[in-house]
Length: 191
Image 1: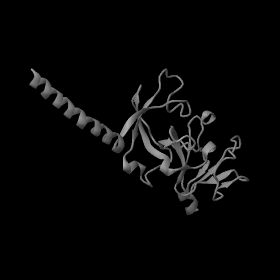
Image 2 (image 1 turned 180 degrees about the horizontal axis):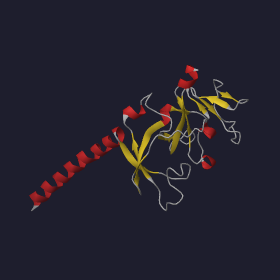
Image 3 (image 1 turned 135 degrees about the vertical axis):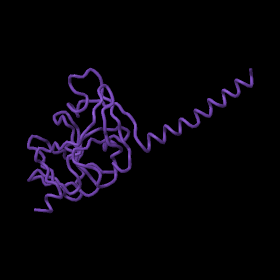
Image 4 (image 1 turned 90 degrees about the vertical axis):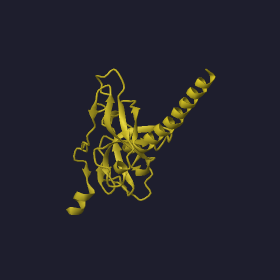
């Protein structure tokens, strides 16, 4: 009996010792499921008619996060520029080199770090600097995003949201939500 218990204990220990590192490796290399809190991404995430939080799959695939693979309209998870222990989820509106028009009804945060003069107060435009992107929540009225933080360093992007996995299965598409406020670098250079 004792030998059987020892053998079962070794098997359980072996399973645990291989499962935990495997789960960690999957989370770091492939992705994971996370709960979305808040209303800044409504109606795409946590729709107002839903009684529960959305859970999304956050892909950490290197090919999705490499420079050049980030696209306008992608939904990304970002380490908060103000609170590094917190993660936020927003949509990419502008990429490096793009010129973003800041709406008249949007207050420009005076605490923005503007070291290279990328913000033109008179024209209410900002040219997204190299190594950065401009992100906004789909629910602009209730979102703290680049309009509050300024351009986001690409190094703060941790994953790309690809699917809502609960309570309804839905693929998250890249949707351009800039409403004509963004002059993309490619278009600007081809003019």
